[in-house]
Every structure is written in C-alpha cells, then in structure tokens.
Amino acid sequence: MAAADDAWCRETVPRVMELVSPRLPQRDACALLAVSPWCHRVLVSNPKLWEVLDLREMKNAGDRLISALSLARYLHLKELNLEFAQDIEDRHFIRLKEMSISLEDLGFLNLNACQRISDKGIEAVTSLCPNLHGISIYWIVGLTDSSIVHMTRNCKQILDLNMSGCKNISDKGIRLIANNYQGLKRLNITRCVKLTDDGLREVLQKCSSLESLNLYALSSFTDKVYKEIGSLAYLTFLDLCGAQNLTDDGLACISRCGGLTYLNLTWCVRVTDAGVVAIAQGCRSLELLSLFGIIGVTDACLEALSKSCSGSLTTLDVNGCIGIKSRSRDDLLKLFPLLSCFKVHS
Image 1: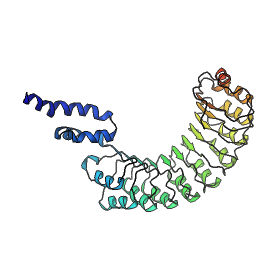
Image 2: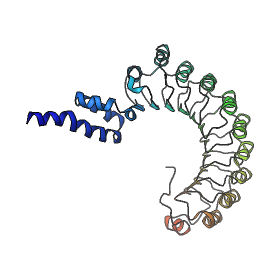
Image 3: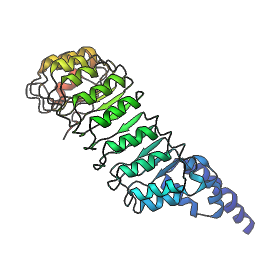
Image 4: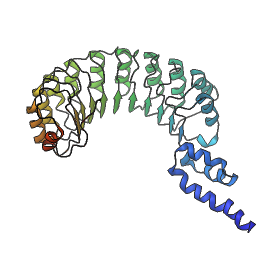
C-alpha cells in the first residue's frame, strides 16, 4: 500500500499536474510548485510555463520581479505583465540592469499605470529587452519624450505601442516613432494632448502598415490629419471619439480604408449624413459603428448603411442621435438583423 501511495505521489500526481498546468493562470501554476518535490521538478522543467510572468496588481512587485528573473526558469521569458503593479520603481529596473539580466526573448511588456516609473526606468528596462515588439505605458503621466528616445534607441522592432494617457509626449516623441517604427501596426495615443497635426501626419505618412489607430479624446486634430488616415490600406480599427473637428470631407477620405471593422465616431459633432454615407459606401465590412451624440445624422444614413453593412454590423450605437427617428431596437434590427449590442457608451 505504501509503495502504491509513493508511486502515486512520485509519478501520477506530477503527470497530472504537467497536463493541467498549461491550462491554468500562471499564478495557479506557481502555486502547484509547492504540492510536492516531484511536482516542483516536473513543472520547473516545462519551459512553456515560464514564458509569461504575471505580476499584475501585486504588492511588492519590484522585489518579486527581481527574485523571479534571478531564476533560471525565466531565462526565455516572452511576456511580462506589470499592469497596476504596486511598489515597482526605477530602481528595480536599474538593479536588473546592474545584475546583467538579459530578456532577449521578451516580446511584450505591460507597464500600464506604473506611476512610479520615470524616463530613467524606461531607459533601464528597454535596454534589457532589445527584441521587444510590443510595449504598453498607459497612464504613466510623468513620462516625457526622453522615454521615446530611449525606446527607439534600445528596441528596434516595436509593432504595438500604447501611450494612452502619456500627456507629456509631444511631436518630438511622435516623430521619433514615425522615423524608427515604420512597420508599426498598432498605435494608441489616447489623451496625448500635446500632439499636433504636424506630428501625427508624419506617423500616418511613414507608418503605412498601421492596422489599429486609437485617437480617443483628442479634440484638437483637424481634417489635415483625418484625410491622411485614408491612405492606411490595412487599417481595421479606428477610434475617433471626441474628434470635434472631423468634417464630412475628412470622413470621406477615411472611407478609403475599406477594411475597417471598428469605427468609433462618438461625439464627432460636425459629421452629417454625407460623411456616414461615404463610410457606408467605402467600408462594407463594419462590425462596430458608434454615432453616439451626433445630432447631424438622420435615418438616411442608416438606410445607406443597411445596403452595405447589414450582413456585418453587430454593434451600432445611435443613442443621442436625435435626427434619427427610427432608432428603437426593433427599428434597427429590421435594417441590421445581426445586431446584438446597441450601446457602446453609457
């Protein structure tokens, strides 16, 4: 009996853990290390389990990060998530640099809302991961153009960049992005309020492979920028919520982006039927469209949309569009039978 129990602990349980652990959140997989020495040995030897390090929202994240990256099992780390992590500071990244920690396999770095990180921290952490292809620095409001200098100097292969809420990034930084990341596919500059038409136009002209562009809550851009968007042949996602200067002429140029599936025009108050009709004629694969709060559109634009997008639209928000008289759920479903969501903004 004892021999059977021993075999169960040494062989069966570790095998079960090995099968189950890849399907579990990483934190649960780490907890399994303490089940037994045999489980520990089996799990540590599985490299796939240690390609992600998730310290999201954790306390003492900086010290935990240093401890984890000191372990051989994280040698080939591919994704590091520090979103809303607590107690992570510049000194932790500087310490990793002093330890000669290499993160050459790291592909994605999430630093969202790590408010204690400054330009110095960005310099240190980007120097560790030269092959990074995605970085998110959402709501680190203290970062400046110097962070972009360090990023473009240390990481040459960025395809996905989220700078949402980085209010101190200016045209100097965005021009560095345009000149160094011409293969960029996803860019989020929500609330980067120091940017102007001139800076963003340079990105749009040089980063022609963009597939996703988020300009949420940026009211100062004009049609000079919006007309350039029409040249992005691969664009599928476009958020223009709050684009108060967007006119029908600008929207007509955007309609050349025939692959768009997501288009947010919430509070684009200068848009009328003419602009939406142009979108209907050019963007025939739309799955989400928000016209929330636009009083210049009428039932005519929905009729045009129904002719081209009735087979694709699943989300349509026309709340607050007082010029559209037939906007009840039943009315909308008659035009767009696939609709399952009627509100983007609450």
